[in-house]
Length: 323
Image (cartoon, rainbow, N blue to C red; front, side):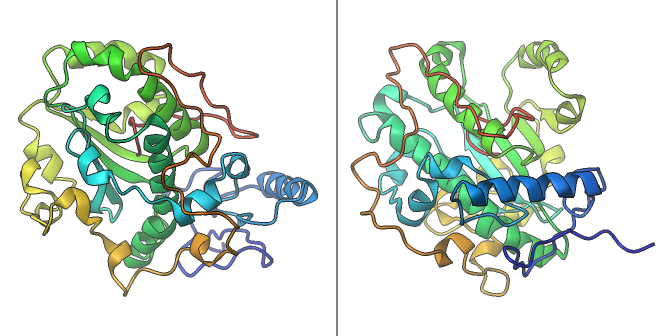
């Protein structure tokens, strides 16, 4: 019996990293049925007929990016206010776990949208979210796949709940709703493991109720831990890859949160992302003026409506930002 292999299209597919998922489940890359392959071919044909010509490769084919100006955004977005925003809400990728996957970290305890909106806007925060997702898809995951020798499609996420109280819930609800919609609708199934650390008293009880509404596969990926989380977290993330703040030994120059350290920065594994090779679109740097149609909201008003994908279904709830 031949080894599983991604059914590729020579017109669009030119990969230099493993493309067969180690997760041998139907529908995953390299484990598709003839019927599923036919559906991909049909969708690509429909997109071509509709005038789409970019990002139609088998692994990352999506349709919504044109409507939100994503291709231009990822090439040109300059989040110059990031260091100041991170004083309230650090969100960053940092090295890899023991399975070779990118580690994604969020610290939620300092979120203060009133203060953050004096530094940036809701529009630009969501734009940054989309850009970082795009950089996860390429170059981060391909670099990790090259280094590990197998296709990696998910992340190990750490959500630090230290300092999170009920008083903050209402003020961040609209933002959480919006970015969660983007996560689950447009970048589904990126969650490998999720460690929720420093969970406040009573959180496990609340989650035990909530998990009844979640997919069992997703529930198995989530670990709720209190302040004594270090041993379980270090069983998944090498000590040298985990920031000192969380019990590791890593202390990147200038801060781990701003280093973007990982295989995607190593010339041995990193390659120029496909979006950087694509033909440039006529536009100015995405700086002070909104250039996408991502809806924004006023934190004092009702949360925005959930974004809907075109032809893609929501599959699992992700962390607030990434997964």
